[in-house]
Image (cartoon, rainbow, N blue to C red; front, side, top):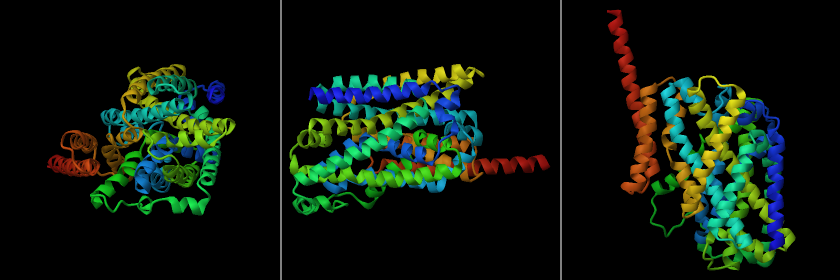
Length: 466
């Protein structure tokens, strides 16, 4: 295992070197945050796939399927694949044509500076929680590989990803995404083939799976149809307007490339995401009664792979995690630096803008580290990240992007009510479907206040005519 750990360290160092070398070409804020708006179809597609295909799929989804059968795979890969495809088909071109730097710029263009700042405060916590989920998963991989305590492994993982993200801008992120995406696909396919062989071949392996574990919907569950809608709404509506995804759209060379990248990345995500799902199903029969279900993939790899092949597989897992966590930290940094700090400083030069963005990465990285240490499960962090404040954000973006209905008052009401209802429903009232309640509250509040704004404008117009 010492050789395996050494191989993983070398792989991580290679990623760090790539990020540092590419970072030398960063001259301004656009270079750092949007890769100079120069991405083509291939790089953009691989980046969308690799950014989204993170810990929750490799570690979280495999563990959920191991624990609950196929019904544990609702969010991943199916929900997030649908999210990416919807972004490509409906939102990518309108967003690209706005020529923004971050999603928060839309709130400033369409509503006001105050709504822009409020939106940033809504989006950053979820993005940092997303990064924390990846860091915790990174720690799980190092713990399973090197025998470290999980807390020590998370600390090492945090140091690596913070340094890696600090140096590399989006271009470094995208280039390493391409390398990591290929390594990820090859590593997962290799493990699946060997696990199937260990199970006696496809036919024998499928026959060994208990029938109830193959049900996509758990019939014995007491969950209602609203619970099912809630499960799908969180990954789709909750992640659709994440800065990580929007940045790939804005960094594309053309709106057509942005659309193709999102749709292609979503379909690739679904295809590759079925591998951890299948491995989780088969792993239940091969390694029953694991104390930590989220370690099923690393445990299978240790059991059935040689040291050399395990290094390749561990590199694949780390690829999935690194390609997601650097994007999440960079997204949080972009929102904080571009939309909050830079405007307060007036008009600093490009060098200072990049420096501010890097400082924001460092701060967000330390916060994500703290969250990763105290989180119970990777899956719980991902759900929290997707749900936090996103109901109001998606509501305001849809109205703001496609209509002229509503202004600053309605946008603020939608953002605040969505967040307040979700927090109250999730933590205090313990509602069965807190996200649907928050989504409904955001839509209702926006429409109600938009009607009030419209009436106020009409009354003012009539008064002026008199």
